[in-house]
Image 1 (cartoon, rainbow, N blue to C red):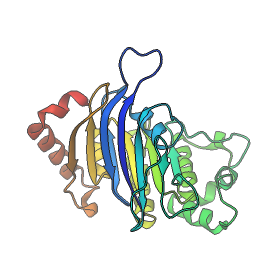
Image 2 (cartoon, rainbow, N blue to C red):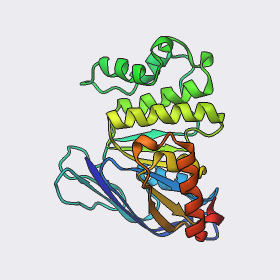
Image 3 (cartoon, rainbow, N blue to C red):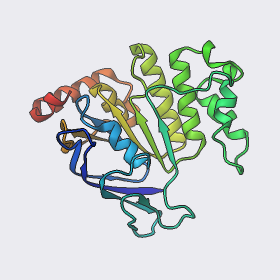
Image 4 (cartoon, rainbow, N blue to C red):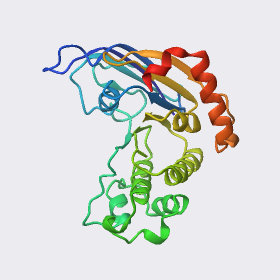
Amino acid sequence: MTDIQININNKTYPTAAKPSIANLKLSLNSNEFICLVGPSGCGKTTLLNIIADLDNDYDGEILCRTGSLPIATLPPSMAVVGQQHTHPKIGYIFQNPRLLPWRTVRENIELVLGEHQTPDVIDELLEVMQLTQSQHAYPERLSLGMSRRVAIIRAFAVDPDVLLMDEPFVSLDPPTARQVRALLLKLWQQRPHTVLFVTHDLREAIALADRLIFLSASPMQVVSEITVPIARTERHNELAIEAFRRQLLDHHPEIKQLL
C-alpha cells in the first residue's frame, strides 16, 4: 500500500516561455482511483512522466509512504521507505498500447513478469479481461479495444504500487470504451492499486474515480478536488453519472473552462 505526496514547485521546458507546472501539490491515498481532468496541453502527461521517474528535470519532490512506515524524502526522485528500491513499482499505460508486433498477446505480457512471478498471473488477468481466446494472436489481429485491454493486463502484471493511465481509452467508440472501463474496474477491484488516470471526458472520470482533480492550463495548478459520491455499484448507471455531471457544472462554474 502506497501513499504519495507530490510537490512540484516548477517544471519548465528549456524552450518554453513559462512553466508547464508551478506550485502543484497533490496527495494520492493508498488504493485510491484518482482522475485528472484538465485542458489539452496543461501538463498532465508531463506530471505522469515525473511520477514515473521518466523526467527528473524539475524543482520539487515526490514523497512516498508504504504501509505504516513514515514518509521519506529524496528529491527530485521519489523515495520509498520499507522496500529494497528507492522508487515504487510503476505501471504505466500510454495512449498508444505499444505492443511489440512480432510477439503474441501472451508474449507481450510475459516480457514484464519478474523472475519470481508465475505464468498463472497471466492466465488470471487474461480471463478477467476476456482475452483468453486471443492470447496467441499477434497485435495486428486485435481491435484497438483488445489492444488496450492487453496494455492494461501488462501494467497490472507487474503488480505496481502506482498505476498511471494516460487517456488509455481515447479514440475508442462509446460502447467499446464502456466495456473496457467496466473490465478495468473489475480488475482494479480484484487487485486494488493507487491509480492516477488522465482523461478529458468528465463522464468517464465520474464513472471511474473516487476523487476528481481538476487542473488549470499551464502553468498547471489544482483548481478543484471533488469526491465522487456515487456508489461503485451504480457506476454503470448513465443517468446517475449525468445527474452528477450537471450538478458539478452548476455548483463549480470554475471547472467548465477546463473541459
